[in-house]
Amino acid sequence: VDSSIRIVSLEELKAVVDEVARDDEGKVMLREDMMALVSPRVFWAFRLHFPGRAVHDVLRNGEASEKVWDWSWLDGRERKKSEKNQDEEGREEWNRLIDTGEIDDDSKVAEVREKEMERDGVAAVVDMEEVILDEAEVKRKRLDRLE
Image (cartoon, rainbow, N blue to C red; front, side):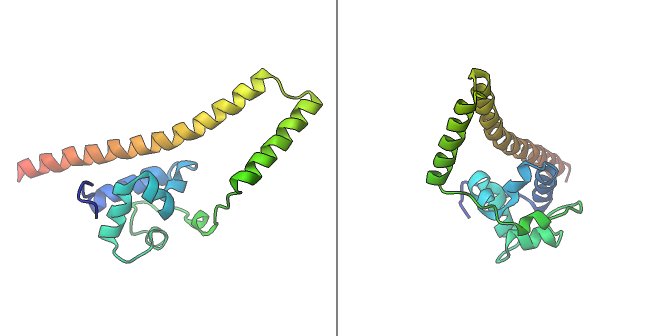
């Protein structure tokens, strides 16, 4: 575990999982590979609390959440096309739109905005995780003072 990462309690981990699982688009960040990239703190919390176990197995068993979720989407592998194929398809689509007269400046703006919204969605989930963990830290400190 990276010593610069604050340890997340099991209760905090469950709160984060439940919050992220609620978001249909954001829940992809609960895939182990995405989690390691986007949220190392949550990734290492899984490693700490469930050593030697795959995240998807822990999620399916309901051990990392307070609520019951449909984890069947974890079975599907998100296949991504190579960058070369994406570029080629993009050029073909772009040429088709130009040839048919369907493209104008507004459609390009809409495309750019859609991509920005996708990036903003990732940032929003990361921000949400930070808020949840910070609130849990405040609660933990209050409890420590009462004891």
